[in-house]
Image 1: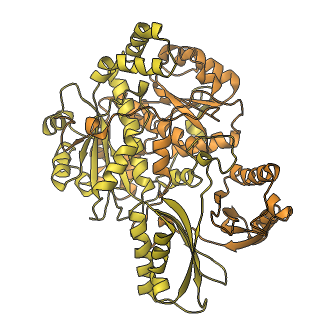
Image 2 (image 1 turned 135 degrees about the horizontal axis):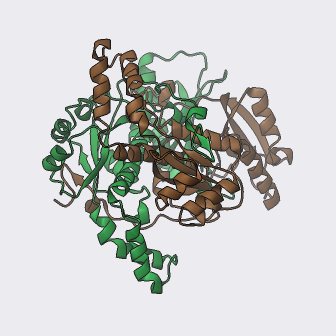
Image 3 (image 1 turned 90 degrees about the horizontal axis):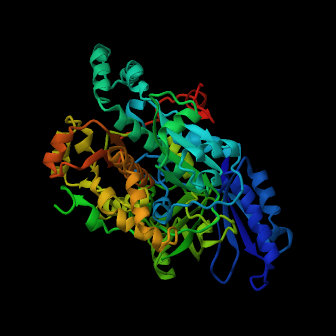
Length: 308
Length: 308
């Protein structure tokens, strides 16, 4: 896959386009977006009109084919020009930025501010492939000593979501969401897999082989309160899942009110399993705005407890 | 602020540019990026050469001034063309997507996979403005009943980070990071602010005024285990802070190994305060790759406990 810029030059900037052809143009872009290949699109806001689309395509031919099949082009409103382009970002070294970290997203910070909890969803399902993509992104979350103690129970089918809802004080958003995930953690991992975690540290040169026994003891000493560690690790997984969903246009909620025992029984969780919470995701049927927030002055302390 | 596309057309595609002028060009872009105004940049990868920059500017004049002061333009390698442009995304309705949720970021999901914990940093500081931006993004995280129980202690100065390091088993990454934040939570909020949370639900029509007393009781009943709730809410705040940092090119770590009592004493935390963890962020001096992961089959259960 390579990135291409498609310019849609207006043949005549004065010609009005019907709502139908604009809708078809958007649907054309939506199809590329659904495959995760639309990077950016938008109109020029000057007198020359036209627009610019950035997308990923296997080769120039397929980029050109996509441009030629755009309803604006097919109907003679626009002339397409396609150029191979490379988005510069830290991970490909293009910006010359010293920082090689692969996480820069100029618009992501803004979206964290715009995020609002959503509990009302359209009936549109989430494709199984997208569910796997989101769960995989959540499984890429950090965990203490890379122990990956998460054992999520994914409730995707309507039946599974209804079973889950009955364990969550019958809160209707659980089955209304197209996907609900129980963020469960197996705390036995903290004990059982400490040797493997120590070996990983030795492999990466962070500990010497002679320090193996003391490293295992150190790792275990970090989990004297396994309940707290389980909640922390499970919550990191869950929040990464929620934000991964957001990045694909989904919306959702965190849910902390559930019946632990009912959940254990319904989904066959062993007694030791600890549940950090439940995440729900779906295609929203409402546009929510963030709830009012306290000010930074009220909540944040600089080098001390806030307000102290 | 509006978005503008700056085209840098190569005056002569055959002319080689010195490493010095390329560095100057990157530094020019870095300055825009540091202000959070660079959206995308990159070269065309075809025979015509040149490149494309997308940025936010107060007006056309300032976009043109930025383009004209690009070292490629000043040195005569490139001719600049500036056009006002509007990025289409769900929240401005430009894509015609039914989903109005303001969180879509095609590249964000990928970056969750590329993220790796970083403990080695360059000495480059994080500007105070950026720290405020990141903390504000973390404060936009969801919390149970929007109670916002977070009381983060921000350690930005070198002195504060060293004080913190002494409370974190003297782990050197704490002071090496340009920013370290104690994700503390005040569990008294769960009890004290339940009436305010009930009033907010009533204001938004989710409960009737007659249900006020039972709503307050319901909210308090959700916090029968305030320790778990505090860890969950504090962790959501912390992970949102970490990912907000990533979106700006920073990298960092979660830290769970600290001396609770020492932290309470050093930073004046009341006895009731609960600490979910410590987040460190800085400009990375190393490119880390994600550690090996278990497979989805090993970790995830579909409608049941994994492996059951």
